Structures are given as structure tokens and as C-alpha cells.
Amino acid sequence: MTGDGCEVSVGWLEDLFDSVDAQDTPRFVGFLSPDAEFRFGSAPAVSGTAQIAAAVDGFFSTIAGCRHRLGNTWIEDGTIACEGEVTYRRHDGSEITLPFANVFEMAGDLISRYKIYIDIAPLYAV
Image (tube, rainbow, N blue to C red; front, top):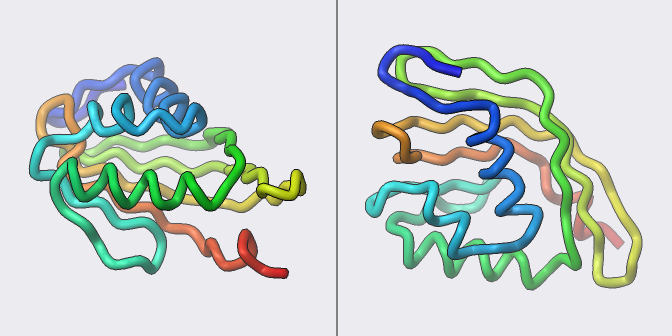
């Protein structure tokens, strides 16, 4: 996929989500610019790879695993948007599948702003 100053392949996007599904935080932050901003759902945004890594590790500690299934993807003006479903596995072994949409503002081949639109509340519902 290419578009307006942003060059990524389908493989690049799959690699990004594979890093999340593997809960591989160092690999994940490798997709981000050093001064990236990251926002997950309604949580406050965090900036910089160290703070993002801490936030992502904190989230990973609350789940046993996850897997993403991508749907549509759009690229325009250095921005990538995608939608899909993520299945979270809880520590008790139960699973829940939720829809998501992500928006990535790119700086070359790195993400400078990573925004995840998801209602995560059902994951933690008892």
C-alpha cells in the first residue's frame, strides 16, 4: 500500500499486528517514531516510546492473549486507517471479540500518532 508520502506494505501492517498479538512490546515500539503519541480507547494519550512501552506492558498484563483480524484499510495524506476485530483471551481462559478502528499518522515509515478506537469495557465486565 502506498499513498501520499506514506509507503507501507500489507506485510508491514500484518507485522505490526503480529507484534501486538505476540505481546512483543520491544518489537511493537519499533514501529513508532521516538516521539510518537499513543492513545488506546478513552485512556489518556502517552508520548515517547518508553512511556508507550510501559502503557502497553501494563495492558498486556491484564490479558492472557489477543489476536487481530484486519478488515478494510485506507491510506491518504500520510495517514493509515484500518478496521477489524480483536479477540482477547482473559486470564480465566474466556474470550471476547470486539470491533476496533485504528488511525496511524505516519512520519515516513514510522507511526507518529497511533490512535485506537475501541470500547474496551466489555473485556473487563464481570
